[in-house]
Image (cartoon, rainbow, N blue to C red; front, top):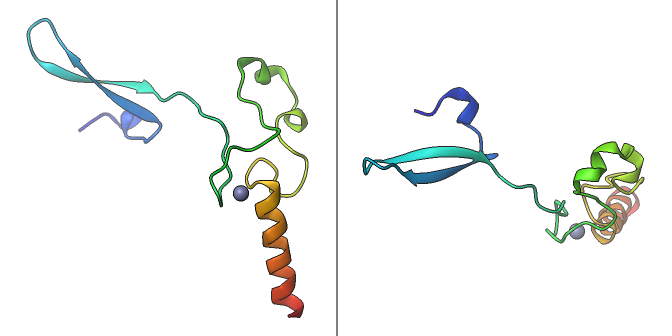
Length: 89
Ligand SMILES: [Zn+2]
């Protein structure tokens, strides 16, 4: 059983062959990918992943609209239209 800090999906298992012939598991952090839309999975526009983004304010790292940085603009517009139809249609 891996130690509690390694029981997470954000760690990737790397199988390493030791000089003695054993295969041991090393855990390393997965690389961050581009932010993706939660509904359609497309890469989100207006989001930054670079190292320099650490010094940027939060408002510069993702779109400043409801669900900005979580769903893409077209999915949000579809979702809002659906919600309004649900209210009045
Ligand atoms: Zn989308």
